[in-house]
Image (cartoon, rainbow, N blue to C red; front, side, top):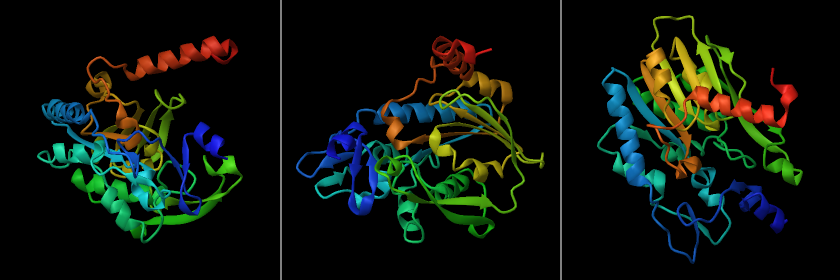
Amino acid sequence: MKIQLEKLKLIEGKDDWLFHSSLNGTVLRKSTSPCRPSPHVERWAAILNARRQRLARDGISYHHLVAPNKECAYHAMLPDGIELCALRLATSLKIATATSPGLLLYPIDELHQASTVRTTYPKGDMHWNWFGAYISYAALARAAGMTPIAANDVEFFDETVRSKFSMVFGRTDLITKSRVVASRTARTFNNRIGAVGNLQRYKNPNTSLPTAMIFRDSFTVQLADYLSQHFSEMTLVWQPNIDWSLIDAERPNHVFGIQSERLMATPPDDDTGPSNSQYVAAKLAALERAQPEAVP
C-alpha cells in the first residue's frame, strides 16, 4: 500500500481521506521540517496586476479565483506528523494583492466555515464538490459586484461514486452534486479538446446580461452552471495564460482567471504563451502522430 501511495503521489490521512500532494516544503511539511517560502509571489502579483490594468483600459473587469488545495481546506484530516505551511503561495499572494480589492479570491476561510454544514471536498478526489464550488462561486460573484444565486435556489444532493483516488483502493466515495433549480443557460459549443485547449460556450436567453470569458482549469467544471446564470454569453477557455486575441475578438465585459492552488506553482506567460488555437493545433498534431486514423 505504501509503494502504491507513493507512486500515485497520494497521502492517506485520517478516516480514509486521500490527498494528492507532495512534501515540497511550500504547502505541506513534516512537523520536523521548516517551511520554505514560495519563490513566485512577486511574479504572480505582477501578472495579476498587469492583467487588471490592461483589461481596465478597455472597460473590462478582472478577478482571479484560486481554488484551494484539498489538503489546505481539510488539513485537520492530514496524517499526524504532516502540517500545513501558513505562508504558502496563495496566502502570501493574498497579502501581496491586498491593495487591489477583489483582484485575488482565495476562499479558504469560507470553505472552512461551510464544511460545518456539508463537506466541501470528497474524501477520494482532489477537486471540490458542487457545494464547495458554490461557496467559492458566491465569493467570486460578490467580488465582481453580482448577487449570488441563493442557496435555496440550488438543489444539493449526494451520490455514491467511485471517484478518482478512492477507486484505486476499491472504495466508494460520497460526492455532493447540485442543480440550479431555475437555470436558463445552456452549453452551445464544446470543441471537445481534452483539458488544456478545451473551449466551451454557454448562452442565456436574457441578452441584457453582460458577457464573460474565463481562463480556467478543471476546478471550473463544478462552477460553470452557477456562473453562467449571470451572463448572456460565457466562454470557458482551459489554459493558464490569457489569450489576448480571444479577448480582442469577443470583447467580454468580465474576465476571470480560475486556477487551482496546486497548479499555480508555475506562473503563466501572458505575453508570449500559446493562444487557444495554438494549444488546439498542438493537441491535434499529437493525436495525429499517435492515432492517424482518429484525425480527419
